[in-house]
Amino acid sequence: MTSPASPRPTSRRARPDKALLILEDGTVLRGSAYGARGSRLGEVVFTTGMTGYQETLSDPSYAGQIVVQTAPHIGNTGANAADMESRKVWVRGYAVRDASRIASSYRAEQTLDELLIGGDVVGISDIDTRMLTRRLRETGALRGGIFSGDALRIPEEQLLAQVRQQPEMSGASFVEEVTIAQPVVLEPEGEVRATIAAVDLGIKSAAPRSMLARGLRVHLLPATTSLEDLIALAPDAVFFSNGPGDPAAATEQVALLRGVLDAELPFFGICFGNQLLGRALGFDTYKLKFGHRGINQPVQDRETGQVAITAHNHGFAVDVPLEGEHIAPYDEGRYGRVQVSHVGLNDDVVEGLRCLDRPAFSVQYHPEAAGGPHDASPLFDRLAELAIAHRAASASKES
Image 1 (spheres, rainbow, N blue to C red):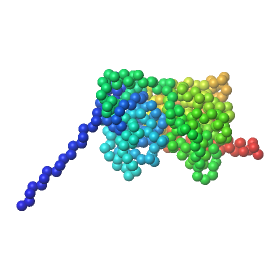
Image 2 (image 1 turned 45 degrees about the horizontal axis):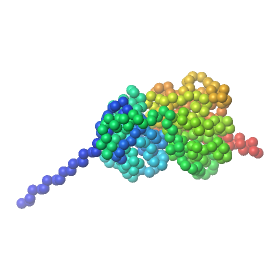
Image 3 (image 1 turned 180 degrees about the vertical axis):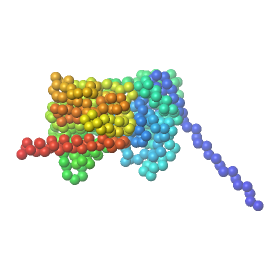
Image 4 (image 1 turned 135 degrees about the vertical axis):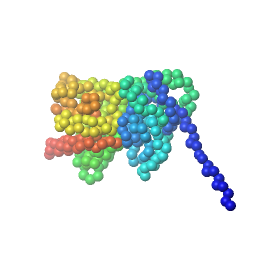
């Protein structure tokens, strides 16, 4: 006779730590702590990407922001060193609905929760991100805070006061925080076809990779680089990267860009670089209601009519009339004619500029597609063509 089997022990998951997300309008969302514990304040924005969360987290353009993922299930592929787009995680806070309990990709080196803890990012899960996204769409991006751990010992009224006391994104500058400290030279494999001076305003790793793949030597430069130091490199073209903050606060970089235009060097700017080109030409920029963030934004090339699905991360835009050619307002038309080259099909926001009397162009989105679709990657071919042509013309003058 056999003895009855002992009951199989049951295990209960520990009750998750509590967390709060508080918006400046008084909205309070109650959820579970995710990532590091503590308090983080920032502008609350949402991103519509269904994948690429690690690239989002490591994009310096998100400095100063709390990012809400509209995709409901986040973290199932974990995290790894290869998918980091910069040296660290830049978001201040992170909000998701369903956080994956495991990392199921063979490429995973750690869970997303572990990445957030290592980056000291305070997050929250188990909240209604759909409701939160609708609130941000209706009212616009709001200041907010995520609170967990010891921070919850403070009364909610005082936490709301902290949220309301933080600075607004308008007028904010993060350039010196995100840029590299010293210049770096990156060499392509094989023949060097031309040289690019790339000003790091919060660059992602995929942008230099896109240039190296086209045979371009890249001088990666701090945002504080002087025009004299840039010109001394004898670049064949200049690139301004994406980056965080209000373009109206980047007065030094606008002055640098005007020097580039005066030297008639080929120029290509993306995202923040597009906004700075607009300001260098004398146009204004303005803050969007809730911005464009995600990897599924439709943009039309106004010359060809072609539509590309593109990756975005911006809360500001350039104010230029969509139709016709315009004389750049700065210094009584010093830089000649300009036209809007690309437009966003969701809301008619300016998504690109083309100078007709200077070798300069820009787009508001991220053609390096990290993460995102590769529809716009040929823009780097155009940069290469301009740089190679400039190199050939310079060599011809010297001979």
